[in-house]
Length: 124
Image 1: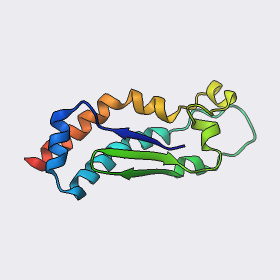
Image 2 (image 1 turned 180 degrees about the vertical axis):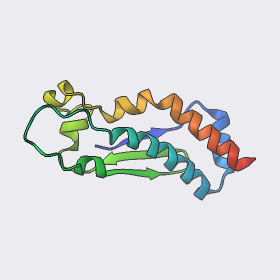
Image 3 (image 1 turned 60 degrees about the horizontal axis):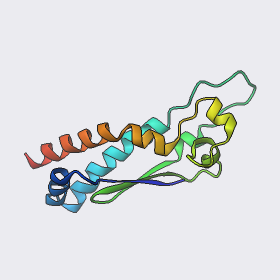
Image 4 (image 1 turned 90 degrees about the vertical axis):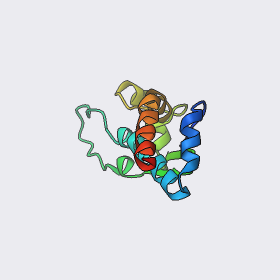
C-alpha cells in the first residue's frame, strides 16, 4: 500500500531542494513524510468489542525519502484492507479509518510549508 508524494509545481522550492546536499534534501523530505505517516498512525476510537488492538499497523509505517519525493508505505499484510484507498473494507470506512492518499492530499499544503521552512533554515 505505498503512495509517493512528488514535489511538482513548486519551482522555487524545487530549486532550493536541488541546492541542498543530497543528504539534507532527503532529511527534509523524510520530515515531511514522517508528518504524514504520523497522521496515519492515529487510530480511530475502537467500537465496543473484546478485540485487543496489537498496534502492528501503527508501528509499520515506513518513509523512504529521495531528493524531491518521499514514499510512504505500510507493508503490514492487512494494511490495504484497513487504510488502503481502493482496497479499504467497508467496515473500516464506517468506523473512521483514514486512507493514505486522502490523508496525503489533505496534508499537501502543510507538507509544502514544512518543507519550505526547513529548506530556508538550512540555506540561511
